[in-house]
Every structure is written in structure tokens, then in C-alpha cells.
Length: 303
Length: 289
Image (cartoon, rainbow over all chains, first blue to last red; front, side):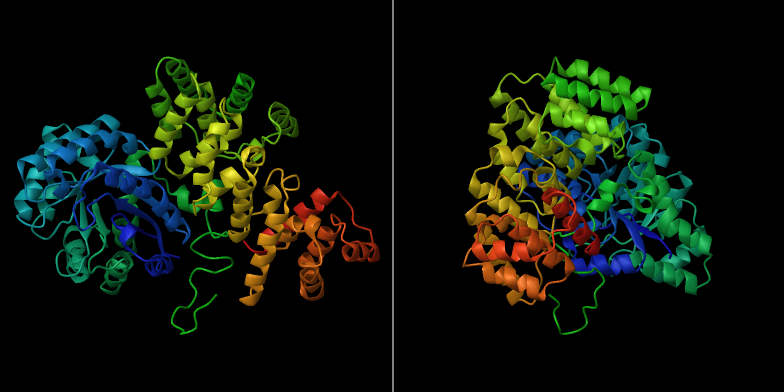
């Protein structure tokens, strides 16, 4: 059985059908970055409850489908623009950044590239450095090339090692600089706005597999939680080597985020009794005796 | 109080590396001075200790029960033990401070931290004030968190009023948890619970589903003319485990017809009722996991 990792997916917004399909497609572990929810939050308490769900309920929900869930903690760039609220969120972050299964500070970076975004991005880089955690950077959708360059410039200015920084949402225009400067280059296979899987194949053909990572960033928009396994299949069809597929769709993400000390291959290869006991037994999602992976195409609703 | 902390410390020392133990001793010293050291130590202990099972010796398990009747750390893991130890070493001034500190810990607790907090309840200096928090915890749908309160924990049997107790048992049935692990189950049986569980069985049967055999343990002492037909139905239609459970339930009944059934069966069963319920529970659990 091939194993995949999706190192960027907002499963809070996805259904149990997605989880089942992900598991069947071979996804064994996922990373859920803290992000915005499609609309701005108005109170710090909403952030706290969101962070709680990332280290609590959503992690449990994933375990029901045999998928190991990790997360990143951070204040996203959009909501950094509400400065009063952002200050309060900054006070919360140290409470969560050190928790089990938190593999990075992220996703942080620029959206409109405002002064407020810059301020809170820098503060969080300092926090990551202090806690010796990797950083997941969200590069802006608009003015991407310059925003990407600036994101990396500021990292170096704050003394971060590029090996500890994953630059996400790359495209053909940004990848070269990211790799040349020694950072990890992640690509998001997301319909319409980011990368397509065919373009991804071309990127790997051209740049190889070193420090390149594939993810889905599937969320509340039109997106695909199977982007990673689908892209792997397409790579295979188009002659990319098995080793390059393993690196870009599994191993590189593990190597990058394992630097947190919070992610180990044994977590899904040999789960502890505690992790196992969360799986499959009389729980709220798979009601008594219900099996995951049941055939849902029939009109008969099982009970 | 601190006998329990010393006991946990002994277990931790048998299971951990020197550098982790140094960190723990350092943490213990700091939290005598300031509460922030408790928050930091409680959360960051995951960086020093693994979630490995404890594997207690029978002597260690007996000692736990002697310290606090019903205290069963046999199912705990090392990290959980460390977290509870840290909680017990903090010098709470009074019940109010303990409540405030626990509220703060719960406000940002991940799953494993919640489990540790709830499993510490029967060991805390101020216990009764924690009842609302324990009831809140039982509203979870996360199995391990529910189990930390409801199973192998003497707290509910000691402090819950009937209404809270009954809701806990009913939810344990609903979530198909191993009921034999509920501490004080036989002492806390009551007519209201027996009725609730019987009605639950009717619902399940109406939906063409089965009910877990252990459920009848809670009905046994309250078998009467209103529910004896249910017992008969289980004996007539149930599988091996269910039939055994129905007969076993009759053994705690004074109702004439149940007593008669009891006399008709061969008393070749070995073991106490407790042991037999445990076997039924274990076998059912194996079949359904």
C-alpha cells in the first residue's frame, strides 16, 4: 500500500466522506494549518476555540478514519489586519505552539502586504525561532512573486535557517528562487487559483524532487482533498520515478515537519495504545458497529 | 495527599530517563513558587515523556487501591502519570484556587491533556467542587476523554447524584464502552436507571438492532412484572453472551419468576458475579472492535 501525506489541508471544512476517500487513497497523515474560516473572526475567544478544535476534536475526528492529524498554529495574514484582535491572538499563541502534534508556526505571511501583516509576521517568526519550530509560509495570491521574495528576505533578516521554513503555494514563477535560497518549496494543487496537477508534473520533471512538496490546501472552497494521491498517479503515468513520487508526496513533508520533534513515521506505522483506543470503538462518528469505508452509492442508508 | 504524589513519582522513576527526571524535579521545584510553572510543565511534559503504557506490577496496582479505593492507574500511560503528578505537586491554597487553575488548564487542553485532567479528579485535594467539570467532560464525544471519567475512576460513584450517574451509564451504553470498568456500578444501581436502560433496549429492538449484554447487569436487581418479559425475550432470542447476561442478571433479583429461572439453570459457572460480568464485557468488546 502506497502511503501519502497531505501536509496542508483544512479538514475542519471537509466531510467524513472526504476522510474515507482520503484513507482509501492511501493518505496516512495530514497537517492542518491554522487559517481564516472564510470570514473574519471578531473575538479572541473564537480563535481559542478554533485552536482547541485543531488539537482536540478535529484530531479525534481524523483518527476515526485511521488518519494521523497534526496542525500548525499561527495568526493568518488576513486577520492580522485587525490589530487589536491580533494583539490578543499573539498572547494565545505560546499556549498552543508547544502542544503535542503542533509541527510548525503557520500558515503565516502576507495577503495585502500591509504594515500590520508585516508586524505580526515578524513577531511570529521570532516565536518560531524561540520555540525551535518550523515555519509554514502562505505566499500571497496577488503580487505573488514579490510577496514570496519578501517573505524569504524577512525570514533571513530574523535569523531563521531556510531548512526550517516551508514556502507554500509556489508556482512556476517563484519555485526557482525558493529552491536556490535553500527553502522548502511546497505546491498546492487547487483548481483554478493555484497549481494544476499537470503543471506539477512538469515542475518535478524540470526541478526534480529535492525539497519539493505537494499538498492540496483543500478547504471550504471548490478544492480536492485527493489532490496529493491524484497528482502522484499522474506523475506515475507520465514517467516520473517512484522515488521522486515518494519524496514529493510523502517523505519531504515528513522530513521538513519532523524537525518540530512532533511528527514521527512510527505515529502511523506503530501507533501507541492511546492513539489506537481512539479508533473505531463506539464513538460518535461511526455509530455502534458501523464500518468506515462502507459503500455509500446505494440508496439504502445503513443503520 | 502527597502519598499519592510519591507513589506516582516512584512509578515515573521506574519508567523514565535521567534527563527527563531532572526536568521533572526542576518543574516540581518551580511550581512551588508560581502557578505559571504548573501551566508550562503540564503542557510541555509531552516533550520529555512518551505515551507508553505503564505495565504496573500487581503489587503496585494494589498499592494504588490502598491509597485511594478505586484508583486504577493500570490503564494509564507514562505522560498521563507525569501530568497528574505535576498537578498533585502544586500547592493549591483552597478549593477556589484549584477550580480557577483547572478552568484555565481545561480552556486550552488538547485531548491527552483532557484525559490527564479528568483522571486526576479522585486524587485532588478538593474533589466535590469538580463535579460540574466532570459532568461537562461527559458531554464529549471523544472516546478517550469520556473513558477517563467514566471508566476505572472512582470519582463518579463517590460524588455524582443519581441523575448524573444515570446519564453517565446510559451514555456509556450508547457509546458501547466496556461497562464492567465502571467503578461502583453495582452499588449505584437504581430503579430509575433500570427503567431508562429497559426503554433504551426497546428502542434498539424496534430499530432492528441489538443491545449490549452488559446492560442487563443494571436491570437485574429491579426485575419485576413490568420488565420480566424483556429478560425472557433475551433468553429466548439472544446469542450466547446475551443469554448468559440475562441469567446473570436474574441472580441479583428477588422477583419470583426470575428466582425460578435461576433455580432451573445449572450452577456450574465458576467465578464471582463480578468476574463473570467482566468476561461477558471483554468478549463482547472483542467481538465489536
